[in-house]
Image (cartoon, rainbow, N blue to C red; front, side, top):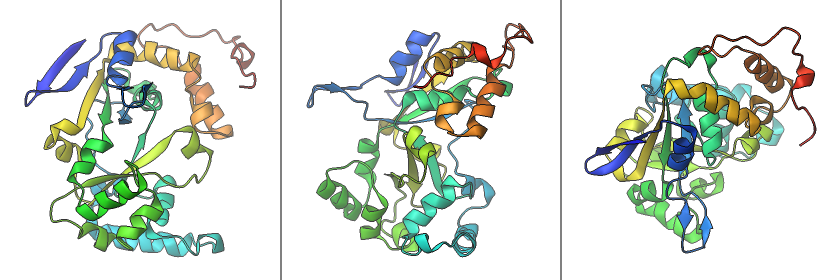
Length: 288
């Protein structure tokens, strides 16, 4: 395992085998104050290590598009059951259904992040990356009003209700501090996908911010784990064995079909294809 330091601190780890991947992802998980192995980090996996942490909204155009897009989403997606939703619930709902927003998907599970880093077979010739960010560390840069809410709740991440106490709209939220900041936000359990992916969002105070640039200016808040391209097929197969698959993370027939399509895709490194008579009955589909 190769370690690279930035500004004197360990920021990037390049794993060379499965054991090193697990060691790097679960580093610093021991919490002596509670006597448990509970990682303080949240994770995001990308199939190409050169990809940055820019939101879909920033890539689309940023702040100028945010208000009209969200306004149109709320208008056309209206349902009586959404009538009392705060802006934070609307934002989570929009992100969950594919609208470009300032939110970015993360997971409490390093294995879920590892799935997203290795799911794209067409990217098996590219190194992948997993970002591990510590919300406790990023919270030190929050405005005092937000820090007080977290302290009152005894939490390191926000809910929609907690954010609503600080700001009723995005403009008020952005104005809480002159300096950019990032908060982590647990969405409501909209469906099984959010639950199974152990999901949460990052929320930046400026929709034009690229989160990797912000993290780079605060190196004590994160680390990166590089997954070499040559290691991806092994990682993917072991995640399949551990049942970290599309069938679980995307419940329903769409997820099942995605899983089967990828499961039967030949390993591009070996060039060995599965025999045509190897049917789905060879895959363990028993109840969990």
